[in-house]
Length: 191
Image 1 (cartoon, rainbow, N blue to C red):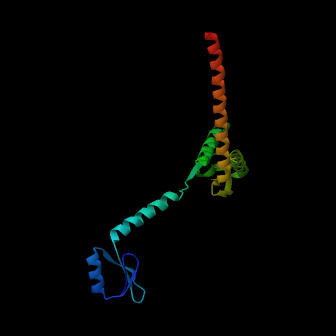
Image 2 (image 1 turned 90 degrees about the horizontal axis):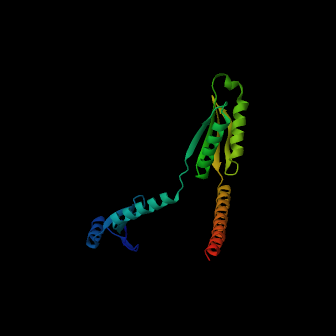
Image 3 (image 1 turned 60 degrees about the vertical axis):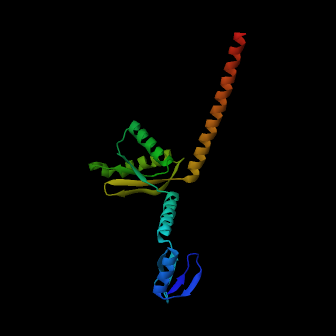
């Protein structure tokens, strides 16, 4: 077998018992790297340490990957304005958190005769959250449900957060100037 040392140096073609003896002398393991090669390639290494480092790399790559969840919000064709506003605020919240949202209109009985009512509701929802999201999957009728998928738009989210930070900074500056002006008259009254 072709033997590779612990530092990556090639040690040449060695018989298996001799390679095992070298690995034992160094206090390391003999690991087969490429069994299909001719001759097979083995490496002298600390297998436990390598395994640990591999798990750390995997863990780090999982941290970097984003996990997008799909939330669902269900509406009815005869929804009241208050309920519509509440559910749409919730959709807005989900999108601002970075989740995709599946908006479903559930039809019952004769409501199936008027799919345009459901489409109107979905269009209203899309219009209300236009500042955060894009329609990824348009209003489609699937059985007794009409479905639309909204996905967060990273550019729109970044612009919204920047605007909120600017407003917060302006409000903080305004409250500081108000505090300064209210402190000044109190000082003059005490004199």
